[in-house]
Figure 1: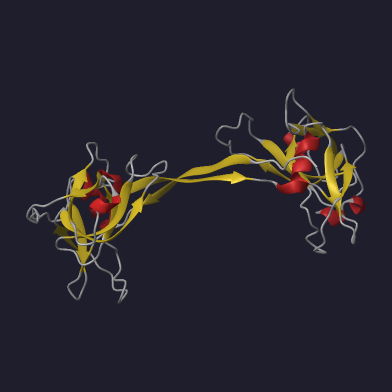
Figure 2 (figure 1 turned 90 degrees about the vertical axis):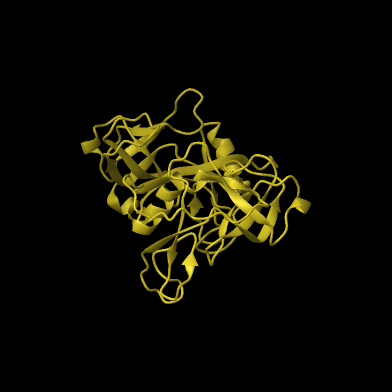
Length: 313
């Protein structure tokens, strides 16, 4: 039995969001080396600030400056920092209650080893050299044995406030397609499409899933399908995707390969986009060294009768 494939996979996209007046003031303050909290109706100061009281749900906008010094309330040692974390050498994640605040702020503490960290230790903000209006404007916290710092009395008003941020969302993991899809991918390298048949309903799944989603039975009988197929449904794409060298408009469709029990998706080319239709007979077009068909083009056969593919829509 061939080895099951594995490969690293990264899902990444930039997430853009606008800021309300409270978050805008907080991040703008960090840019200007000022830490702002928000005061609730009962006199608590929340840092980082929120727009609604977590106890009463009352809207809160009363900004107040707190000191850049504080006390560690709890911590955990990070012995192996990952990509994008505040420090590249081992450090402690800490919750710090800044002087003047009633809640704690999560950030990194630059400490040489775990036994140098303890609950109750005094710390202060180490500001980043280049500040842009983000939580990373606090480079980290560092141990501090001096007197509590005094706030400057900032009002929370800024001439050039930060109004939005872009945060990169990223997920790194190792993906394994499993036994069934490994066989499918290996067959594609030979320019073949191989599915698996359910032993009960006899439907052939392409790509195979290792089990029939209808009957719940494991599948193992391999069946070669195609290479030609029928367009069952399609859409016309008018927005160009980043890093995809295909001119718009183009057509993406579901294609039921001959012998398959469900349709797979693929790009349809070799025909004007406004002439693609349901029932169009197509065949795969491979590029040199391609791991899967680049697109599907018309075979020149008469269109398939609707009755032959209506169950695959």
